[in-house]
Length: 125
Image (cartoon, rainbow, N blue to C red; front, side, top):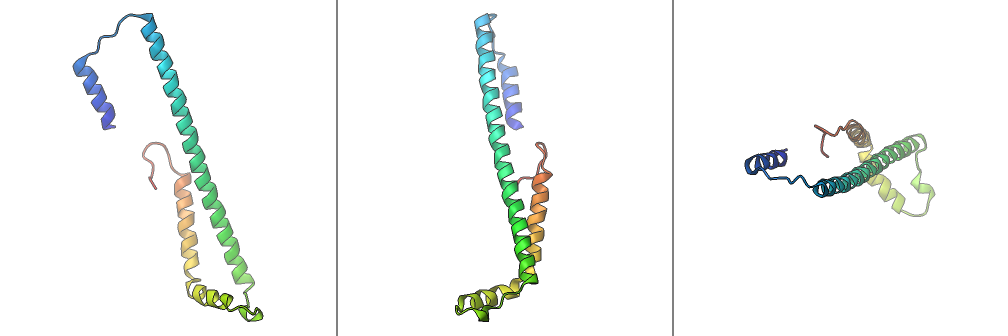
């Protein structure tokens, strides 16, 4: 916002002279079209990036919720297997089970923030 005011004050103070040359006006219009094309491409890439983030976050929340439900509905018995790695993982994850809901809540809140963003006055992540 301050750059806009700086440019505006600079132009008011210096008052550039514009020739009545039709070629000059055509050149300015061509340059403005190029700028509009660049802006459209930047906006397209920004929207693509946002959608990729939203889709990844939504899929992560859905997959995490599904796996959490499966873990609670079908508990895993590591003693049936010969490897002790599952026992070690279960012993590490077991105390953290209640915090999985907090992690899911945080991801859901972030998803809501991303969906509710607007161009002006938006929340920056």
